[in-house]
Each structure stands twice: as C-alpha cells, then as structure tokens.
Image (tube, rainbow, N blue to C red; front, side):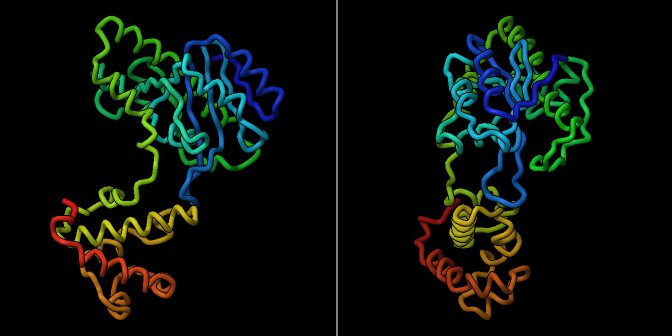
Length: 294
C-alpha cells in the first residue's frame, strides 16, 4: 500500500491538493461522529488518487477550502461506497454535493453482487482482501488518533481504488445500465440532503401500524421533533424516542393528564413541551381526511 499521509497543517494540505491536479478520479471517504448532534461532525477525510493516499484532519486544519476546491471540480469523478452519508456532510459544508459521483455499492448491485453490499464484503469478493472490522465503533473525535485507526481509515480508500478500476472495466465490457447512470445522478440532487420534517414520519419503525388520523398525528409530531432537533442540533432520540411518539399518535391525548399516561414520555419533556405537543395533536386531528397521509 502507498505510504499514507496524515495532513494536519495547511501548507501540507495545499501541497497535497496541488499534486492532485490533472487526476480524473479520486476515491473518497469520511469518518464522522453523530452520537450527540443532529448534524454529523466531520472528523476525518480520506482521499486516494492512483498515486497517493491521505488522511486529512479537519479538526486540526484552519480551512478545508483547498481540498473542497478539488472535490467540487466537475472534471474529477468522486468514487465512494454507499455515498449518501458522506455526500450529506459535504452538502452541509458547501450547500451542494460534489459532482460527478461513482458509487461502488450501486455499481456492485448492477454487476450482480447484490443490493447494499458492504465495503468489506465487496473487497473480499472482488479483490480477495480481508479488511479488519475492529475499529467500526471508534470515537473519531478523539485526538491524537491511534496509528491503527488511521491505517483502518486509509484502507477505506486504498482498496476502493482497485474496486473502482475493476468495476469500470466490467461496466465498459458489459455496458453501463442507464438505471445506474440515473442512480449516480440522483445522489447529487441537493434536495435529497435537505431536511424534510413533514416526511420523516415514514422512517419511524412501526408507523405502518397506524391508520387514518393516527398517521396525521404522527406526521405532525415527527415534524415537530425534527424541527426541535435541527434547532438545537441534538439527536432526535434526545428530543423524544420513537416509542412514545408512536404512542402519542395512537392514543391522541387531549390534556396534560392524558400526556402523563404515555409510557416513556420524560417528565421534563412533559413540562417543557406538553402544551406544544397538545397543540400539534389537536391540529392534526382537525385535518380533513383527504389530507391524512397514506
């Protein structure tokens, strides 16, 4: 494997980015922390060209602009695996997604490796490489970063290069399906990364067990929770867990006494947000049936 650069100062980052000029593609991955916030906290960026690999420390650098200028260059294809969460981070950094994109997970599906295959499994199938899985729960905010963690992070782009080159050859031989081209393009649509409070209820497990006006209440309450999470940059579960949210939608209490009967609704939430929850429930119950979500 190429020697891995660990970039923590601005001159080194600028030198590295200057060396990327003229490349037609880059392998790209990120490490982030999202346990205590709504928005992901970017902790490490891994970039590989055909000749170089670098782990770039955004927590140490005063500016990522030299790197972002390279990543947002539309003449450079950005190669990622299961790209959505990585692209979401860049959307929050610049309000746009780098283009064009090549997602090796989507390409693997088109080539017959199955839907949503993981990176380690794909590396094993295509390259015969067994990747370590011992650092999947690392707190990437911690400094200094252990050299083993950096090696693990670098592997995420080191072998991604080889997967990409093999997939490119296979797709050139077989022809790239139009559906794959469309899927890559869809990943770059900024609308995919914009919060949509009115739609998050669909991602709640067991929402299908609700019907009629209950779904209208769930939609309204889930949107309220999303707005609170965004405003305070806190995880949704810190605002209110899915369980009591579903129970509120199922039982639709109309007073504070009824709210207090909801299992899992913290007393502090009842005290701070009880009136707002009741208002949201009442508003949803007043919606005409034709406006209820299906």
